[in-house]
Image 1 (cartoon, rainbow, N blue to C red):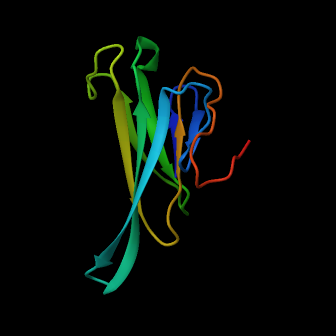
Image 2: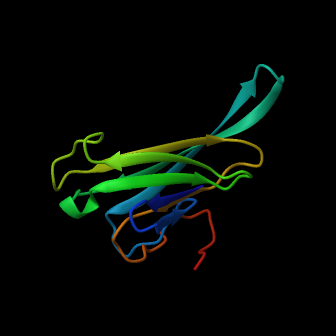
Length: 126
């Protein structure tokens, strides 16, 4: 799963690793198993969250959570009227995904450079 800033398609994260040099951005991933009642089998479920600390006006915009599936699935969240945070406060965006194999979340950010990877579980992808 990955997070992307929509406006300029900047990649913010791959899995739990952020790709910005700013410590204000952090991605967390929670895994869980759930039972699919219609298919009587267990499925893995993951919730990815993009945390933005000390929110700034420059962070305004839409962020997309993309699932590495065929076909690719995505979910959009915008830091504007939908998420209200005072400048300098923290903000968290969530992306919940399930499937087999477990999905990977990718975060991207508009109008910014690369983001330093800070997660522990996924390899750095240049």
